[in-house]
Length: 474
Image (cartoon, rainbow, N blue to C red; front, side, top):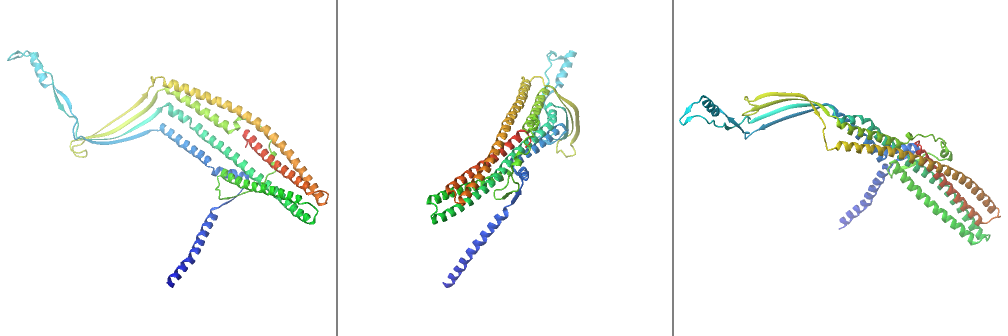
C-alpha cells in the first residue's frame, strides 16, 4: 500500500511539470510565429501589392489570358492527327451480288432464234442474286492526317485580339492596385492620426490627475469646496473613458490596416512615417489632367477595342473558311491474323483543299452582327458617361479638399487659441486668482479643439487622397 501511494505521489509531481513544459512549448511556438513589420506608407503599399488576395487573383487572370492566347495561336498552326485501329469480323458482312450467267446464255439463245422443246426461246430469266462477301475477317489501318488552316474568321480575329486582351488584363491589375493603394493610404494615416490624438489625451489625463491631487490637498486645507474636487474627478473619468475609446479604436485600426496589407493579425506592425500638415498640402495645385490618366478610362477603352474586334469577327463570318488537308494511311486485310503471312498490306493517301462556304443560316449571322454593333454603342456610351462621372468626381473632390483645408486651418488656429486660454487660466489658478471650475472648463475646450483638429486633419487627408485619385495621380 505504501509503495502504491509513493508511486501515486511520484506521478502527481510529474503532471504539473509536464503541463508547464507543454504550455511553454505552445507559447514559444506562437511567439516564433509572430513577425514584426516596420513600414513606411510606401512600404505598406508595396507589401499590400504582394499579399492582397484580390490582386493575386487579377494576376492569375493575366496568366489565364496568356494561356488562352497561346491556345488561339495553336489553332492557326498545323494540326496533326494519328489514327490506328484493328477489327476482327466474326461475322463477315454479306452483299447480294447479281449472277448474270444464265441470263446471258438465254439472251444469246433468244437472239439466235434457237428452238426449244416448246418452241422458240423468248423469255430471258432475271439475274440470280447470290450472297457474296468482299471482306476478310482481319482488318487493320494506321494513318496520319495533317490539316493547315488558311483562313477562319474566329481564329484570325482572335489572333488580332491577343494584344488587346492582355492589355485589358493588365489594366485590370492596375485598377486593383489603385484600390489597394487607396485603402492602404487611408488606413495607414488613420492609425497615425489616432495615435497622435492619444498622445494629446494622455497629456490631458496627466494634467487633470495633477489637478485632482491639488484639489484634494486644498480641500483638506479648507481652501476649496468638495464640489471642486468632484468636478475634477468627473473630468478625469471622462478623459480616461476617451483614452480607452481611442486605444480600442487604434487596436481596431491596426487590425484593419493589417487586413488591407494582407498581413496576419498575430503579427506586430510599426508605422515608421510621421504626419504633418505640410505633407497634406504638398502637390495639391498639380491638377493637370487627361481622361487617359484614369485607370477606369483605360480599362473601358480597351474593352471598347475588344468589342470592335468582336464585331469584326461576326462580320467576317460571311467569308468562306479555307484549309489544306492531307492524309496517308496504311491498311491491311488477312484471313487468319493481321500479322500472318497471308496478310495483304496496301497504302492510300490524299491531299486537298477544304472550303466551307456559308450560304444561309436563318439570318443568325445578321442578328449576331446587330447585337455586336449594339454592344459597341453601349461601350461608347459607357466611355462617354465615365467622362461625365470623372468630371463630377473632380468637381466634388476639389471643393471637398478646399473646404477640408480651410477647416483644418481654422481648427489649427482654434487649438492654438485654446492652448493659450488654458495656459492663462492655469496660471491664474496657480496664483490663486482663479478657481478649478474655470480650469476644468478650459481643459474641456482644449480637448474639444484637439478632437476637432484631428478630425479636420483626417478629413483633409481623405479629401486629398480622393482628389488625387480622381486625377489619376494616386
